[in-house]
Image (cartoon, rainbow, N blue to C red; front, side, top):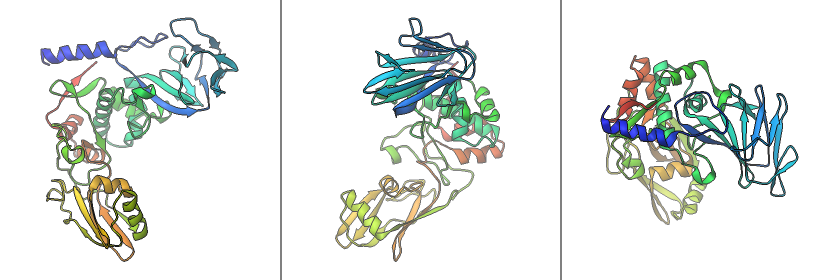
Length: 383
């Protein structure tokens, strides 16, 4: 590791270290905050055992110390926070189980502790160490029955994505959400033995490009070839390059949109085409681009010609308008509407999860998988 990179990582540690309001288990790793609920009118908290501590100010004594099997009920009433019927003057509560125990939110267990915020209702934030967070992410992003090397690759990608995208929801009071907008996270209820092992066997490992943590994007299935960033974002990212898959034309799909629905969708998006007469788009050939397709074959643009005009739409616009699985598709007109038929699922950038499975099944290591999908990166042990 270069001296520059060591210095950078030392700086990251200085930024990541967070002092918890209650002693946590010794672990030199970053803490991350996950928004698991927003706009709630009431939330119930308990523990898997032991005492529950409730603070208005973590630097002062707790306002509640609830013994085992006692529940904390927090609700919003006339714009005020009530905790077990007692009015809370501030806009925040910190709720902490005792060491080695876990907190339950509406009966669902989570590692770490909870920060409760008053923001258009109650926002529930899980403060959790990164590795503990990944225990609840990896099994929701990849089936735990898959090969260990695929699970390890997913663990590294998920860890890298989380650290790169901290503060993504900072205006809402947390780092990442718990949905597919960031990474799906369901706490301890999602954990499995194999995915926890995959996380542990890659502990602290993060992907870098020239000394900077990468944005380790991943998707379900590329359909046969991943995509380069400029064809999705309009800007080139050196480590997000199109690469070939072990298998092609994977995850075939078809969607039919009625003519009436299609015309209304075009009009809603400011495109008055009338009755559709023709769709101008070259045939799909995975791995061979053209003027209206990227190198991977994904749609750059398609021209829909109708009785009142025409509409030139990007593949991303069409995917959004008609909820298509991917932009790797052909289009044809039928007697009743538009037929989209294609392959893959997701945006096509970075790691393909089904592609990672195929590589792992060919006995490729998790490092082989990561270096296949992320061009020119290094794998460093951050902590």
